Image (cartoon, rainbow, N blue to C red; front, side, top):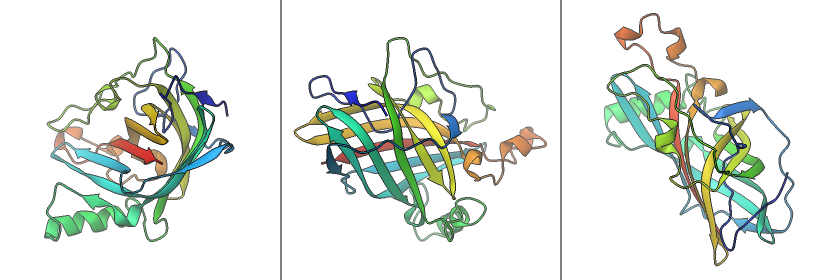
Length: 240
């Protein structure tokens, strides 16, 4: 992996990768790639300040919440990030749009934990490992794709991306035992020994085997009997 240098105290890292002129609908995915080798000093992830928010969509509504970050670290050598890895607790998934303890909250939580979605009994954790970081160059852009229009059309990629991205980050995202390499734009900074990184993007859940209600199999989308494959993800990461 090429180390990415900071300009002054500005750094770039977390979860993004794209080269000049490329664009993305949901994040670009490929087969798992070799993980970056950690060199230099190691900064521990601040699990109390780091979070991953999610939002799922269906024509008749939306659900949102977070997945707890349980651990991780970022390696820094001089003014460059060389590697990073993060783990997430699927069994600790939170739903924020339904009252905890309510019947609907319980039904949705159990369904998300089931084999229809995360299969948490067999795959209780998810992870992300950085494979490469490249600068966000002038001319780079996030391109939106057309989606089936409804009252709850998923947020576009450009809506979710940071206003002023500094880099593209690529890494292996593992969920439900499936690993895909993804790329997305992020805004990262370093100040007084603390790294912060924010990113927002869409994934196609079916690429990781979360295929319940797959919209691609909907016989008649006008009946709204499907769940959008698009899931919005927002990262807010801090390491000390």
